[in-house]
Length: 276
Ligand SMILES: NC(=O)c1ccc[n+]([C@@H]2O[C@H](COP(=O)([O-])OP(=O)(O)OC[C@H]3O[C@@H](n4cnc5c(N)ncnc54)[C@H](OP(=O)(O)O)[C@@H]3O)[C@@H](O)[C@H]2O)c1
Image (cartoon, rainbow, N blue to C red; front, side, top):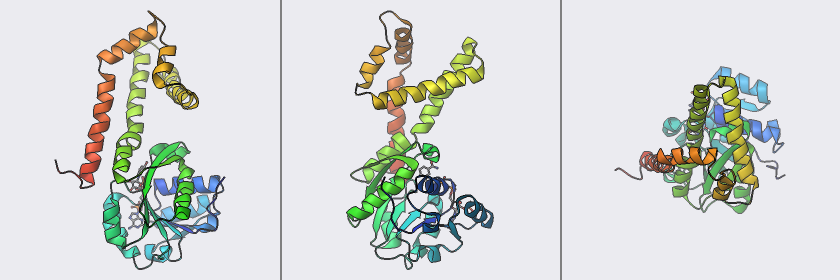
């Protein structure tokens, strides 16, 4: 397994995602606790992170990035305008900045930090249990070695995929970033349908959750096209065929497409790309 070598990693913001990343890095032994600094304004939270993870904690963002090889921007996007510009003077010229802030564009970050090696990444919430998928892209200033470091660091949340530009990060935002919410809604519907038939809710939940998980793992491991896998459970004149017909009548495929496209339009609008 790749490691982060001796790289020093500083997180700006010690919230949910920073903790998930730091936990993943330590759990996979990609770096030692002493290589990680988390800068976070809340004293109670700093104490919690130091105690739980053994990482170095800091109160002053600019101080925390001095000497860092990788700086992870993990504050809420609304806070970027206040938290990011003061880092500019303290950043090492060879540092890699990795932003996981949703919707904050590379151009905006370059405006705040100047010319810098920058990776913009879009993780998703299953990263908190190491089952996430992160789409990421890099600026030309990022060296291949830094890109490998970004890849290794993001693998702490699960799978990762490099995409060729920011437009694709917006597309991933709509598909895999928002995707868990779509799946949760589908799961709720499955569970409620089970309860409506007469299954106990805990039983319906177990059936629904493992069905979705199992189907995803099976599809990932199978070389067959999704449509072939679907046909394999659809016997002529059988129960699944009835269910699938009802889903198509309800417009499932079109609804999912509309949901992802609407989310994509919103991601572009929030990033200032579209005003319509
Ligand atoms: N959660 C996800 O699955 C997910 C997915 C994709 C992208 N993201 C992105 O990841 C970023 C972090 O999300 P999150 O869920 O981890 O948010 P979060 O839990 O709110 O974490 C943000 C942390 O930053 C701290 N903070 C606030 N102002 C700061 C400042 N000026 N300097 C340093 N730290 C500061 C906050 O402290 P206080 O609590 O004291 O304010 C909080 O601990 C967001 O930009 C989000 O868009 C998250």
